[in-house]
Length: 307
Image 1 (cartoon, rainbow, N blue to C red):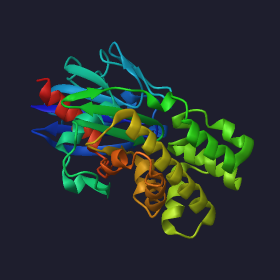
Image 2 (cartoon, one colour; image 1 turned 120 degrees about the vertical axis):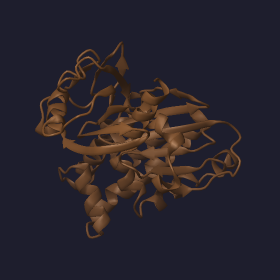
Image 3 (cartoon, rainbow, N blue to C red; image 1 turned 45 degrees about the horizontal axis):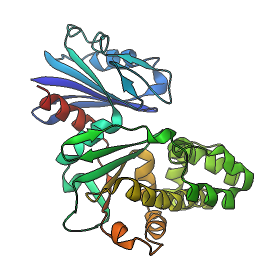
């Protein structure tokens, strides 16, 4: 049977049909063009002859509780009782809301080597069954995997670690006070905020990353390389918080723009710089989830497991 899956971020929404582990009819929508998720689903269904659905699973970039959710970085609200209503003839199918990092957590065991970019290899034989997913998109969050369990978090709203706050203050002076939480820095919006302080330019994070990739904008390079270095320091903190000996897996557009570029050298330099506790750090693989549809696969996998 077929399920409809969606991954709703702060900037974009991805929707697809999933059957037997395969995604089909995948479409991407810019959220600014729509007033609600219901409008996105209406647009997706328009012109498509949808099969009878077994269920709907929507992963959202925000906390989920009691069948309801709200996007952290956009005023969109979700209720499982209303999720399938915009789909013609499908309004009474089973619906499920999950956090987008939880979706990535469910996707992780099924990802292939082609969907992962290895940043550092780590130990051949992991000494525990813990892995971490860290998502840097419009916002920031993490998800811990321990064995078959997927553990939710809202780490984006936690305060920046002291070492990173001190490095920011050394670089930015009093302007560092604007970066109070992890999400304030490690996100597309954080890139934009940091770039404005360093260059005086008001630009979107995705545009800064695009210019850095071209290699002709020294101001974009300054922003991205500083962020990469700070992200390396932050990844060290994550190692000691979670001991993810099965790897830290970065995901999201901002993560791909930073770690999928030459800036990964800055990340690795910061991550590996301090010799203290080197044994812990050396054992942790770091990977980049290169597949933009991974959260959709995770939502589909969860629906299969719950069937």
